[in-house]
Amino acid sequence: MNNDGGSAERPTYNADVNVKIDDEYKSFSGTGKTVKEILESALGDDVKVGANGNVSSYKEQKNNSDHSWVVFRYQTPKGWVNATDDNLAEGATLALEFSEKIVEGGKTTYKVPTLEVKKTVWFFIQIPALDDIKECVESGSFKVREDSNGNPLKSVEDCYNELKAWTVNAGLSNNDLKNGFWIKGTGSYMNEALANGLHDTFFSGETMTVEDDGVTIDYCINGDVMHSSLKKSDLYGWFVDFLGWGDTQLNNGDWTYWSQYTYNPNAKTLDDARQWEYDQWALGFYDMDLYKYVALVLQTTPQKDGGDFDVDVPIPTPSAIPEELKA
Image (cartoon, rainbow, N blue to C red; front, side, top):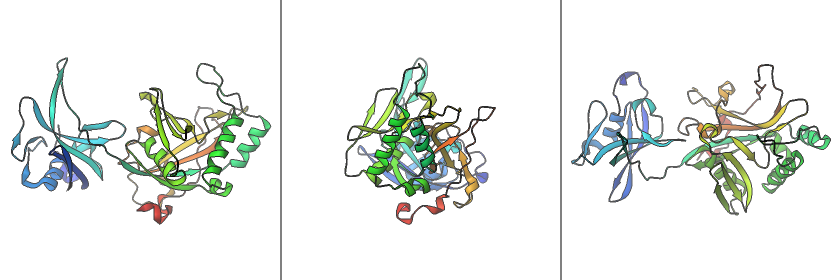
């Protein structure tokens, strides 16, 4: 389940270790290069861990034919997965669970923890070409929006009006949108953290609801969709609609859409603009223990001959996050 090889070459991680005691989870702090070291740091002599990282007992409760001690890690967007030395991360949430063994079709799995986990992410949001977008909308230079089946979607003019309505209701000026702003959100998944951050920053006095029809997850304020993203596994977290705006195409082939960037989790500093990386996956696929800083920029970009887009934009580094958001 875990292996202890090459520990000398691994970084040292701080992690929370959660154990269910009297039907409630209690959290302990652990430090180490491996799962074994972290468990022993957090739980001391109460836990017995083999050289391979497998737990044989906790507080003298030993594995049996129906249950085994299993170490899980909460990893977005997968949820609870088996913890290994290779998937550790700084600030990871682990759970030591006396887990029920489930055998189906000759395959053995273990019941995952019921503990709810929320992580914190900082988002930078910016609309640098707001005036250009407005001019395009007023000139009618956008193509008619259609879904993959050719069915008409809401017009670009409606998208723009909804975008303006959301930002005006949030108290944001045109300068705020052009310069960009930081928010902080918490959630069990990246999209949930984004919606939480928007709600708590701008709409905390209003009700946020979540609608899940199996295809999209919609976060709504007073019934109006604030953020909608795809739920299907191959595009989990792909933006369908964010603050009223969905992907749109100009008549010249350019696209206006929410481009997404993540800050390199291996960066040595939070003040290096070169560490912003254009996202290759949909937002929901990013592990929130690793990717704590995200930029969302509504921009119009030309498509190159190879199908890629010219997406380089200057983005403030995480060192610019206001002090009141860092706590």
